[in-house]
Length: 47
Length: 226
Image (cartoon, rainbow over all chains, first blue to last red; front, side, top):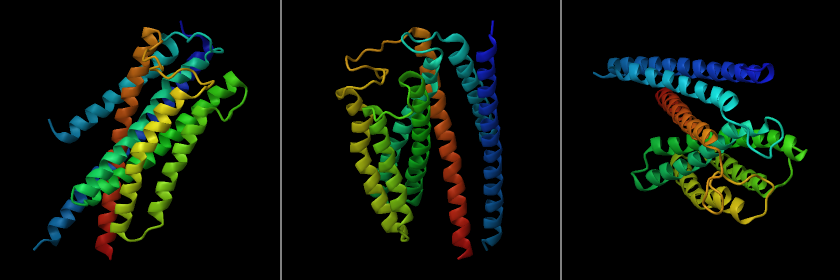
């Protein structure tokens, strides 16, 4: 049985961790797309 | 399976892992004896953060050695600098969580306890590394001096993190492995603590990888614009 106070602490910690996780996941996607775009530009520059 | 899909899968596994650690830390692990209220639960986050900080500083020294004796490749210099930035971040978080715990147990956030003082000195030492880097414009000189400084940390960091807490009298609870080489901790607490440590280490390498790739991208961009 989860008592009131500790339940809230767990919930807040999970929300913070999920927020950080989603931010990192999104950042990873952006880095991948930046690298992909860079590779395309690199390909165009090569004769 | 594609590499990107595998990475995403690992990321979600990490989410699940750390969520289980959070739940385990507050709902499954018992309270440690001799601590006020629920304050001992901070151990599951404070200690792994200190471990990751130590690991980051040692990793920075290894990357610095590879930079100096491995063909002066900028990616090694970058990896060392990012590791130190993250080591500082985790070190500050460990210090803040330690101070919160000290407020509950000792009645004050800061007590100049040997443990608090030694981590503060190590953080200042690495803050000086960043100051040194920002003060040098030439890429080669910066890389060389910063790498030598980070290697010096290989002597300073183990001394401050491992030796000082074991040879001085401190109010701080025993390290996980105490001066007799024993672990005095209930088994469920140990499981959560080690799981948390692994999770934080994975988180460190994930952030490190992203930050290195972002910096490499901006450096290539800047080089193209010159």
